[in-house]
Image (tube, rainbow, N blue to C red; front, side, top):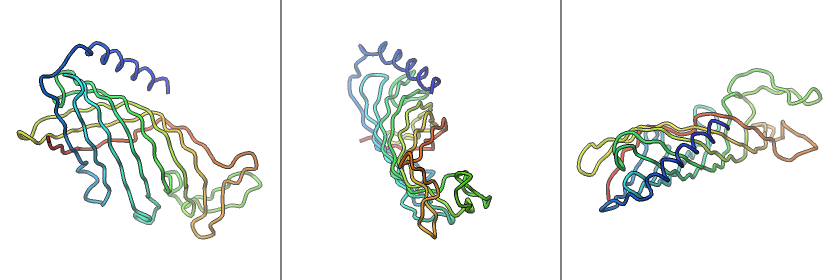
Length: 207
């Protein structure tokens, strides 16, 4: 989390130094992530110019799969990002700060194995791969990327981003439908992680 705050503080410094820069015309790009479309996952957004070197982007990530390779993979995420380009908007290297929210029904990666799982010493034992999570997350972090022009109206945007992920969820057994994480002191389980949560190859079209 400290690393995220430091990155955001650096970005704020860049933004404040560019406040007096006004472009002659402001551009808007529609974009979609070419990595996810072939597997039926939509990651799309719109990026619009605010200043000469500053853009703002809104994006969505939709994975409708109730089962993907035998694992629950429903994710609905929406986010907002501010970007600072070192040369000019939509051109070459940039850094960004973002915040996102997600609603999901998934099987977290540490439950993919067939290991025995027991929530507490008094809880029943289950096979990890029979368990899944139903909840939501809030993410705040930073992005680094490189965008370049393919033609007059088409760009390619390569990027990766990550940061703090705060998750609130309930754990269930796939077949029995019972909670595996029953706790009389709270209704939702909670986890906090520092991980990458966005990235890919966006193909952008200038309006």
